[in-house]
Image 1 (cartoon, helix red, strand yellow):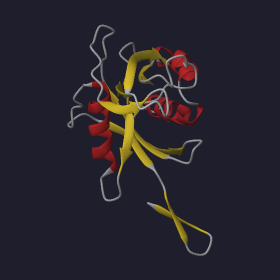
Image 2 (image 1 turned 180 degrees about the horizontal axis):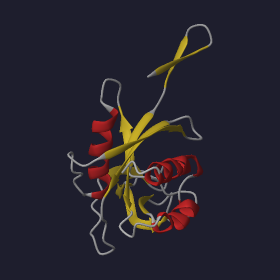
Image 3 (image 1 turned 180 degrees about the vertical axis):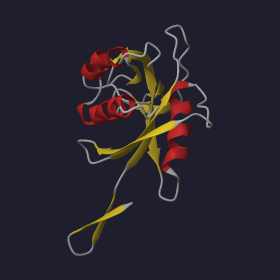
Length: 173
């Protein structure tokens, strides 16, 4: 996706897609839990509230957003999403830096003792040191009650929780 800026300059808009897995097995909307993830690496090691995200990742022009969401969920968590599950469209949001994020919700379970298997990327650390390290994209995952998720999640992604709660209360799941 591109956006025209001024008369002739085009800027590529970065897009991500993700899956918000939820557990509503208690049947009470107040007990709704959602899977959120913490970014890995030294930049985020001491950052907590407001830095978590739904499992998501960038996709490229021409790639289907839903397919990218499924792929990124698996790459970031190590859990293979079931394609035949019921996925609830949560729409899109625009993050602070301008990235467009598309999301879907799916019911599922994430046990606290489950091993997180995230893909990695190379990062120079400290910056300009010439020392490169492999860093996991995600270093923690938590199936958190909505009240806790709201304090940990990036503010721009909170509408995904709001939309999920509306869909669940309307009986759409």
